Length: 349
Image (cartoon, rainbow, N blue to C red; front, side, top):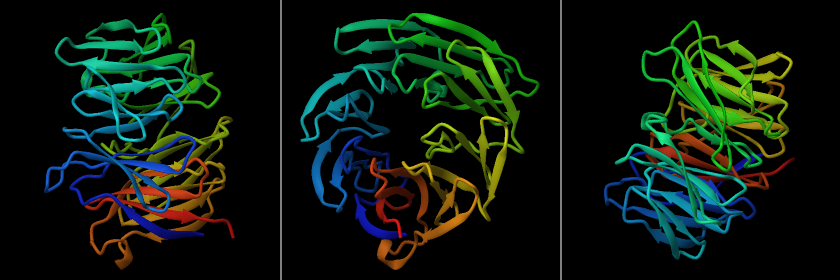
């Protein structure tokens, strides 16, 4: 059962970036540009009580807990590192970021020099990944493996067929460089590593590719129709045990096994994002019609949560764009368009 719990944060024009702490029920929320032009990041506990406020002085685009949750990385016009008590520890030049999930490393983009750089905070070393390597427009197509040992980038220019693929070890050494040719011109949308770190899935508008960490193609399959690329939300992701891969496809969510079997979940409206529950038993799906629906891994509908009820703020437009479960799976955070961040409490019955 999922019940409405708390509201966190302020009103804004666009969905606020959110990030759960990896070990505690602490939720960081970034206030996007609102009518008062606030640029705060706020940290809340699971009861909706404000713990800390960070004044970032610039538009907040991304949040991520790093270094085992000891610091919160905030991407504004630079990369800021804050401790959970609100102290600014360090700033790193760069307008983009991709944090290693295990080691104290971050890839940042220097727009003035058009350089992607790998910073190692522990050894104070810097590795250049190359000039003009990855267009800034494809900033999201840079992903670390779950074990932190490999970094993959994939991109293509508009109206160009070949997809350029690069894989590095975490010391900056290039281990694979290849091009993927396909019969349709389709833009790279997202990369997600398998939980084992032995392979990753690459999603375009029309095709999903499975590729191992050496850059070898393992499998590929066509999607029914165009993928939707949203600025916010997650529409592609492995189940926690790595046995299923889900991808949103307009009004459909497809769940596919590694042996090719597929389950389709049909919604009456567009899928905005989804989030697997940490147990892997079910996922929450955000929909354009102000709903959050829960479906199990076999395609059975479990529950529907309406986000525009009176006790959730009273606004008519409250479309969920971002969904995130806390590490225990007890709380679901939703960042809503035209609103703010809300928490729902989940309990098995």
